[in-house]
Image (cartoon, rainbow, N blue to C red):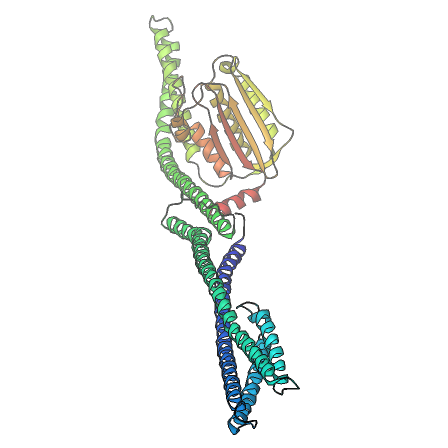
Length: 526
């Protein structure tokens, strides 16, 4: 789910609020239902004594009326005067009738005071109808209190019938209440069962929401945070290959990606630093070896130059004397050939010592602005005329004049060493391509051939002194070492490349165009 953490937290809070509201609503509804039930039972409990009191009062009223009528009939047969007991019974009848009337009025007022929302025990229309009938009977009884011209027997009979009817009506009122209470019990039973089911359902739903809340919190927040912490500890322990994998698509995933990018960049920087340290260490070791070899070469060159010159001069002198004194001797030609070989080898050794001196030469050489294109063309033109290279091709490509601050003599030596090294690796018909180009701050010289190529071992040791793989066995291993020293002294770099034996080689020389670039390069290296 592609949501931000703040949205996920809002969702979790919403789930918590929903669970809280569900439980609260169910609890409040249950409390209010209980409250309504208690109020209904309380009202019905107050109604029941009133109905029972009315029935008792009507029963007493009928009893008083019955006693009064019986006493009147017994006395009326003996005398026409109304005895005192009959008068007392009539007064009691009036009092009781007033009580019945008041009780009925109170009963009606009690039914009217019940609010519509509290009619949980049923409708009161039957009680109201019955009270209306009772009021009618009471009015008739009020009218029948006086004979009003009726015969005594008829008056007593009508009064007794109304009282009987009134008693029957008052007895029906508790029956209505009992019937409503029975219906109310069934309704309450259904309601509390429904509320029990609703309560358990809401509790289960709240529990499920709580479980969902915990699960979602674990998946969305705690587990990603734990993964980030674990990944940070792995990286801090040195495992830079470790990557934090999150699919939450939120800020936590962005943080994990940032940590992964930081780890990858740190790993790249570390590897680059390690490579630079190895390269610099290799250069320092190489420089130390070059310096040691240079000092040794300078001493050896100075020590053997004079003996070599003496050997060469002595060979020439002996050859001259041989030509003068024994021109026709049978062994003269053989001796001349040996003397000539001694002179050539002596001069060859002298050339090696001169190269050793060039290799060991220290100090700054004056540099001037030179046209590199012209220097390269002059060297290639000279090499083309050498007899041993006439069956091999040398091609040169340059965009035009390229001016750089170099030592012309040293740069010619660099070009000569690279071109002759490429030509020596070719068979007849081979080709060497020399390309000269420039960029904003650097000049680039590329010498490539389609010769024998190089192995990884040769590329690693190519610029070491006295290392050579010349096929004719004539190499001294100093040419590329001197070239490497000259290029580095000019603030440049030389890089070998070959795909393997038989695939040709390519040497790329990069030189700064101005002396200020050379100085800046040295400051950067420092």
